[in-house]
Length: 95
Image (cartoon, rainbow, N blue to C red; front, side, top):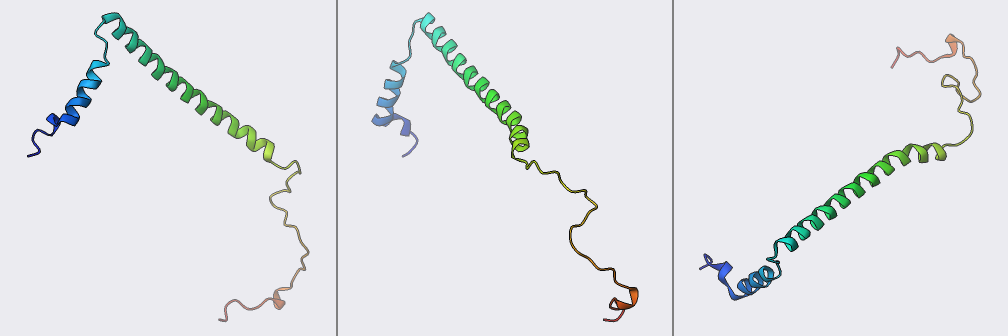
């Protein structure tokens, strides 16, 4: 029943309409192929350019976003502390 679905009048009409739009003149076909190739090449180059701009802009934007305050040394802990004697510490062996 579905073996000849492509011969349905709807598909036959669509196929005839699509085939009639192709030019049979050799120069027109070559021109269309070159135009299609140039369009694909333009899209490819545009995509590469946009990707490079994104890769180069990311470090610049991160550098501008950083605060200009100098960061403290990594071994310095801010706060007030009191030195505790060992006898004042809780015994960690007892649980």
